[in-house]
Image (cartoon, rainbow, N blue to C red):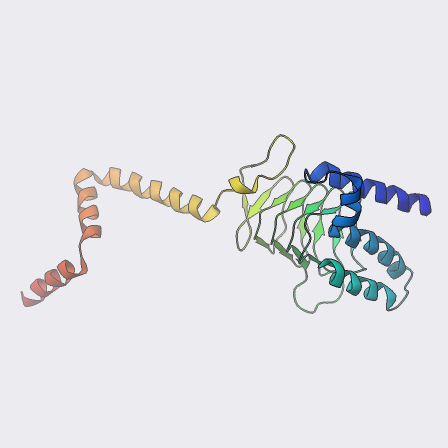
Length: 239
């Protein structure tokens, strides 16, 4: 058991070096990364939770929330090489299952909906990245290698290799990732604007089919002021 714990700690430290370019030396990683502190204590409290020891696992979770700003329920199952970057405001619910090589940022919530018993929190696949402020709610599954954009609210299952953005979360086909598979948050498309642009193109096609004259009439009608429209209505009413 001790060998396994040491292996986990080494993996967790190496993961920080791999995923955070700001990690410069071992002292910074050990003393200045609240995500690491919360994760190490969670692995200990989770073991106590599995042994059905009352109170102590939840108390450890409570103390770590005060110290790190990260709340991980001791019942949550977390895989290897998990990294919480920055960490402040992260909440991970009791029945959450997280795979290997997952990266999440600050203000992420892996929460439940309602007061249902049993499995009520999300299942996160392997190699998933969850952007800052994202909320993943309910007993849903996020597929392997998926990317959840910052600020998204996800309430439905997400397939593998998908990128989700928006409120509620919508799957976009485009893959905005660099050569290392890291989500490029500043290049995620807006699905609402994509639909608006698509409708705009369809309207233009219809205008072309109606002819230039009709298109000009439509444009003129759109640009009329309210006063001009009222005058036309008054004239038609007097007739």
